[in-house]
Length: 276
Image 1: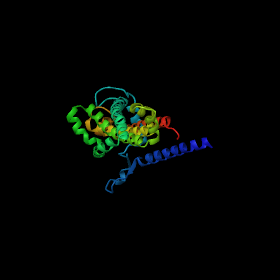
Image 2: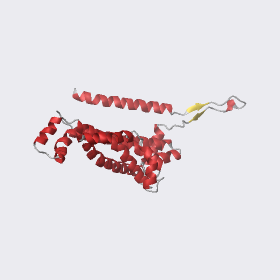
Image 3: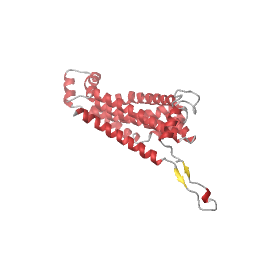
Image 4: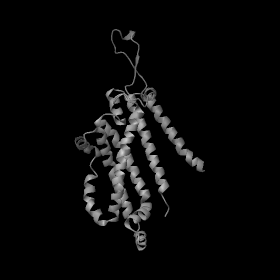
C-alpha cells in the first residue's frame, strides 16, 4: 500500500507533463497558409508557416547548443549558462548569509524582549512591504557596483521572512520552559542556545526556506536590471537577441534550481523537527 501511495503522485505528474508537452507541440505546429484569390492563385500551392513561439523541438536544440560550452567565459554576452547560473547562486548565497547573520540574533532579541518587540515593530512594518527592487537605485548610487547592488537586494528581501519567523517562534516558546531554565540559573546566552534554539529550529528553517525562495525570485529580476552576468542577464540578453528558445531554456533551468533549493531546506526542516 505504501509503494502504491508513493508512485501514484509520480505517475500523475508524468501524465500531466506528457499532456502539457503534447499540447505545446500541437500549438506550435506549422500552420498551412493558403494563397489569396487572384490571377495566379491556382498556380500557388499552400505553404506552411512556422509558429513564432518555439516548440519543444526548437527548445531542445537550443538547450543542446547552450549546454555545449556551459562554463565558457567570453564576456557578459557570451558566457556559458552554467557559469552565469553559478554567479547568480553566489550572489544569492552572499545576500542570504548576510541576512541570516542579522535576522537570527535580532529575531531572538525581539522574541525575548517585549520592549524591543514594541520598539522595532513600527520600523519592521514600514520597511517590510517595500519591494526589494525599489532599493536597487539607492544601492547602485551608494555602492556603485552591479554585484554588490544585487547582493544588497538579496539581503533586503531575505531579511524579513527570517526575522519574523525567528521572533514569532521565540515569543511562542512556552513560558514554563524558560522559567525552568532560569530556575537553574541559566544565562541568557545559554538559554537562547540550549532552550530557545532547539525549540524554534523548525520555524526558523521554514522562514529560511521562504527567504531562499524569494531571494531566488528576486535575483533574476535584479540581474535583468543591472546587466552584466548572471542567469537574469542571460535571459535578458537572449530576449534582446530575439531567441525565445534560449529564454525558455533559462526559465526551465531557473525552475529546476529553485525546486532543488526548496527541497534542500525542506529536508533540513525535517531533520530539525521534533514531536511534542
